[in-house]
Length: 383
Image (tube, rainbow, N blue to C red; front, side):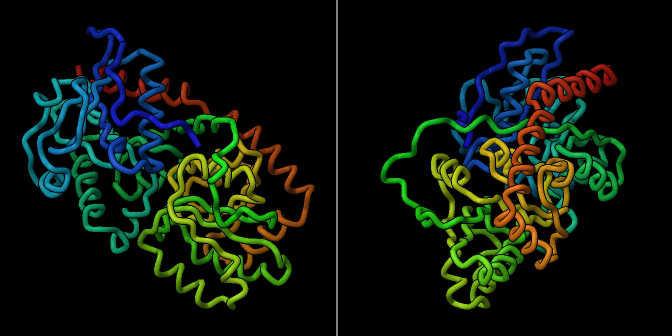
């Protein structure tokens, strides 16, 4: 698990001037519970700062969130912005300090007269609006309006770029891969750090919020089919409750009692526990219905853990040949791949070796280089 990142990044040390674009950069995802998007935003910001070729100006949309002196505040509640921006709003150029580029890092970018970039990760809520919360659906409306008005979309995979191009009817899409999570810190966890996976039984680990996109009911069913052949194996799901919690409980109810008792729902875990769980896992299960990137795939590779995943979204692109893939809805295929990893030492070693090699394809320096090149390209075109 990466070390914590401060809620608001420090101001850019890059020199300003005509040759150095000023980029208003949304740091809203760094406030509140840290998610995969929040990590992506934090690590991207740090990489751009280190590169030093553009001047970043952090901003967020909120009336209450605590901010540093370097951060500009769009003075309206985020919920109000989501209701206004699909229809009408004055531009925020002056509030943002009249930057050269505005980058909305979490599906939403405010109205401005300057070129805009908006980050899109997975496309799940665009394709399944009925499964999304009202605010998430409104974010989709803001995104569509921004793209209609000329915003450029950045995705973290070619798979997402292709879907965005189709769903939003635009060719202004750039795929820029993210980098790997920082290497987990060394050292032993606290002695009192206890989880339901403390015994010596092999366990399959799944990491992520219990939401529909993660497809955990299928994972529970697949594990149920393994139980007779693997009488000591366990399944551990580490993630905060979400909109699929009821479906997961229902899937557990359909298993026989002995199998259900071998499945642990840990809820959200801290960084030390997550690292410890990954280090001890027999495999990482990643059966998502869609992913924009997939940090857990790379985290598992860093810890020498084989990956069994679905062939959905960006997963085949990010995992390459370092995971066993199956159709997201195929319970039997997922169960077979999990069985293979649990029983075949040769395939385990092969996946671990491939995972280590696969990490070399990803670099935050490359992410920052490609993103700042896009900023410059858009800024020059607007002159």
